[in-house]
Image 1 (tube, protein in one colour):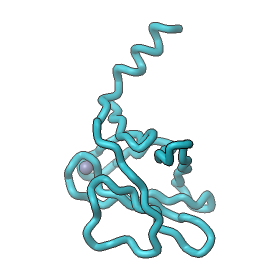
Image 2 (spheres, rainbow, N blue to C red):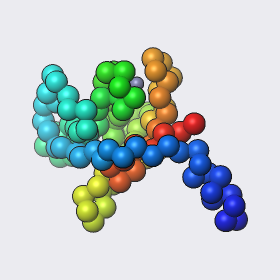
Image 3 (spheres, rainbow, N blue to C red):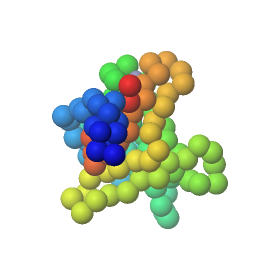
Image 4 (cartoon, rainbow, N blue to C red):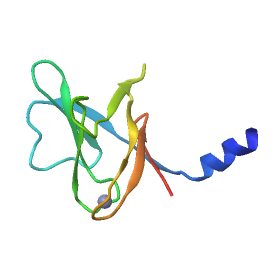
Length: 109
Ligand SMILES: [Zn+2]
């Protein structure tokens, strides 16, 4: 059991940079590379907008509304660190595949 855990851990390359999140009604034209923009209407955040962490400069949009597919869920821990589930897996462009966990990017192999 323990061994399995280490194997899984080895799949990820940890990035040292920590992202912060920002609630916003209007996502700016120039995105900060270490900010996750939570686009919000009056009721709730409905999408996450960010620059692709690989550096390809693509703008990624992750839908948070469960009536549309695919959708993601986010949570904030006691230190206000942002976690997104499931992973982001780009099928076009750079094909990056990563998790955002506690504000950090965890790369999948
Ligand atoms: Zn990319």
